[in-house]
Image 1 (cartoon, rainbow, N blue to C red):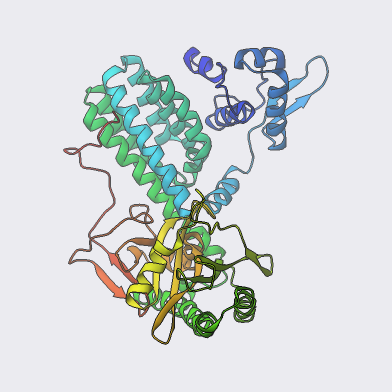
Image 2: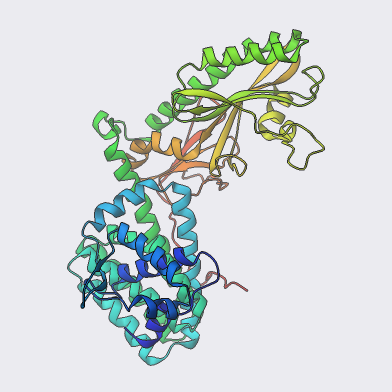
Length: 495
């Protein structure tokens, strides 16, 4: 390998997460083919010295790589640690792609786009003739590849050289991590001659702009290429998930936005009906109760009876009382989370307003909207940083007793679970399809161009099918695309 790449690969390590960093770096180097199958790694003492880490940290990292079957250690005079290329990388990649939530894929895609945009812009200003020749060579290798694996490695090396040509060591190191986290999945969408040729042409377009020293156009071309790849992965992910589902709309003939809207409508109406029942049951308990312990016991029993069989997509459920409703407890909630086949009460919320960790639920959207409008509401998608640390939706129904608002009955649902539940429909619909909430924010979609939480301004050419619940709708369109910014409006550089 080139001296600069070898120096980076075995160069000094950062000061934190040393073992994990070694694992990531070697894993990425194997994936890129910079470390060949069967190649012997330097001796442990030498390797630890070159990485700038202790022998024990290195041994810990090598142990992880052995567990992953990426290296094997042989004893004896000619022994040592030897590289092993994975045999079933396509199968592993499919499993990893479906394990990812749409949000994870989107975030990695954003990071990939940012990296390649900056790398291309810097390379257009700083690349040598030799750098340009190497970039062109790797683009040609993608086109000439006979397998997805060959194309993936050439594609990965193209991006590594692009970052190196920009003469940014940080970008170069980030490329290694990017390959380990996302780029190794690109083999899944480089699996035909047609796709390899298309991507090679996009890489050649980047090369030509770098050769012409046009930083803006190089950045725009690189961004477009990155977006297209992630879009392909997003579509493939849905296809794989749909194929693994027991029922498919393709089999039943349901392939359009109307059928999807009907299915989601049934789902949301079922949840709302359960919440209405819980709210009706809780209303007299909260409205007439004077003893907090009895109120909690009676509401807990109601929750256990009504949600005896908790659906897997529910992450939490319960009652949030409005301020001052429960005697001597200004702030009061009774919240439950699934644990295996049972519900367990969640007592982690801090109800003391003087505590810095106070859970100020009374001002949250899922409380405020039902309080003001006395109707069911779906708050989100939002990132539940204090809970599951993922995108969630809280659906709530008002609790009203003698015309007085007492609080809400609510459930939390993960966006990822909604996506899995309706993946068959999303995969079967060939046009861009997006589920929007009442505020036109994206809940789920079949396109990486429409991300969770984005606010969508519908166009006259869009078809919008309203649901009968929560103000949600399903939007489809043919005309709009999700390509990168046009060449006349390049992606701006990071200051």
